[in-house]
Image (cartoon, rainbow, N blue to C red):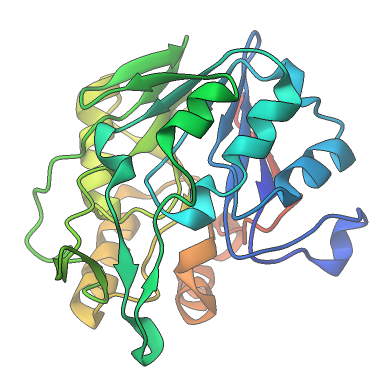
Length: 274
């Protein structure tokens, strides 16, 4: 199994490829038989990067949307149109809620930037699931993630109906790696620890091999940051490949904590999990 970061906030100079960066995430999961695109970034830039990486949109077997924010769904319409076929789109039914951000003293919409009907018209075959669903052999859509920890309170600047957004639609992908559970995450609004524990329950795995993707540790409070890192240390994963909403200060903490087991998951980074 191979996971490639297609879109991320940064492209390293060492990449050597003319990739585009933007505030968003998209990752490609490749198994022996399937290609699954997880999130689609903020815009159509995902198509440029797929082309640079040699991945034809029509080769995609499924698309998974982590949650209903623009920086994870903005390229969905472009990808579906380029695929020129019906493509299964997995998501939680709550992704269409209106969302707002109060960060930086303003109020701006941060939900999906187009109506559900446009996505259906472009070939999106919706699979809206609250329960876990197997997307491919060894790859599961998490469904709704139970909130178990008391300290994973999330980012209170993100709101829905005037109240802190509960992000009931926040989901991840679970993959069976050679040495345990692999979690692929867009933002982990539901909490990294909650997501991993749910993954153990869904897959039957009892060891965390890797976390790949957003952690949302950057914008949350210090208690959530410290207790999450402490739990990660206890799990002793082989790889922590964080990106996007993790932020540079928390990425630096993870680098210090995990050393060579930490990888900044910038655009163009590929991880072989076999």
